[in-house]
Image (cartoon, rainbow, N blue to C red; front, side, top):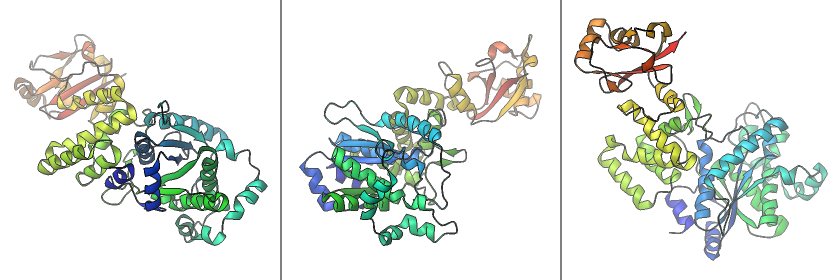
Length: 426
């Protein structure tokens, strides 16, 4: 199966400027391609993974990927998919964001490959030195206003209440200039991006054809959505970020392991490098026994390892076992805090744990695991109470500061899955 056939099987083709010609070109030898990422924040999110993963698929197939950080275009803001104009960022904000994003782009691409190392470029390097008059003369004259106005991203904004500024209207020229520059300096023949980038990408292919008389292609992949059509990558807590300081590896893993049943097969194709037989086997297992969640776990493991590495994945898997009664040995406080954020938490005064300690029955009631001390004692006698995931069977058991996890937490459990956390205060 060729790279283009694999992308189509995975559902990663929305549009292509000339699929037949591109197929012939790819068959003749390695192609240089690029995908751009505008630094509107200091972290990419899971919605940006499609571009990174598609670049990586091409690289594994022997092609030459370029990741572009938009230090210049980020100052303008892409109107695609937006109903209102973005707030413009300062140069200092953009510089910080570009530096942060470059590190994230480097996680999935191999910049040290022997034959086809990935490249990382910033379009501010070639755009910032260019004067406005030179840009109008050398680039602007190749664009028809009628064609620019017909672009979906422009037309939808013009038909809306807020309209579109000249700044954002000019964005497609800047992106087209990026493609033209990479075509002349790096022999880049293919630009990839989400389906909302189609107008910007074809602006680049048209500019290259008119100005250079050379071939260039555009390829877009569908935007990822949930089953109800809402935007992918959002949770009640906000976006799912690639920066582990903003979305921890544990929460990142949980996001994918909680994928909707109807979407798990699609996400396995689009977000992992598992082979077609492996994915089809997981889909068959899911159809036969959805409750086992084999496909969901395989998806979450694969994507977490890609984005955060195997060490973070192993720590995450260990953390995930906590709420299934797993041992707490080796768990870091950061991971523990992620886990306990999933269960009810109450404060307990530090003075209550001073010698000779607090009654465990009192703490069970305080945590809300039993309505009364009598019920708490019955639960203890029945062996249904766990302290820090170790069975606590004595009704006379006291709890002191020596029982605290990280000097501040107690993890209580009733039965198999009813958890509560007590956090020391004062």
